[in-house]
Length: 328
Image (cartoon, rainbow, N blue to C red; front, side, top):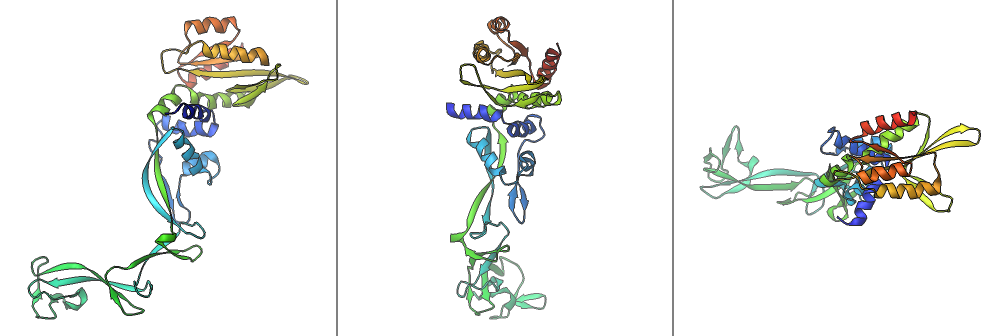
């Protein structure tokens, strides 16, 4: 996976919609995201629509997660849309290869094995029996006395017969007739969470959404991600910035960064990076959430730089520890 893709993934993990959506996979609520067919609009992803609050952006959202390596997909179906109005409410019509009428009759062809006579099945029918029109012998057993030799079509408009009909489409929405050449064919997918993304998300990035909700519930105004201009004039990004009014024209600012590691502990680098930012921004409190835990060097540096360190294995522990620390 390209490095740039990982950077994009980490940014997407901070998005609330992404966090809520991925939590469905991580909690086991879903393992595969399958589309649901709607006769008027085609395939939809109702779960994603509910998260986004907009049914028009579901496919764009899923495709972005796929392109950045968060989701993987497999082909589920292909669906025809109208070339004029893009409706998926399409019927397939089998048409006469001569006059293009779709008012055709389909019949089975039968061949009498003994005499070689071939005709449509209805011409063999006499009462409840099949009788050869040529030699008048009764046909009793399929693939012994007779065999099915394919299909035969007859046009009710022009009266001509043919074996293979033309395929055409009719849009029930705008009443447009169109052929295969003009059809808009869209791929439809089932989505699953990639193993690498599951590991990345489960070690911490899904923590941001519940922490943000916790802060809002406790009277903070929250930005995530937050971009704050420091005394130097430079903009600094924090995973979360929370504000609460203290008195008239003054407010308390708390910044929070999240550091995760696939190894046993987080290195001291996130501590150094956070200190550089808070030195320029001067928040009232700065928290660093380390998942699953912080290295010994990182702990010492956090204490030296007056950074409140929270070590947590999951979001519940992180929120509980943060709440206890903020009450002090």
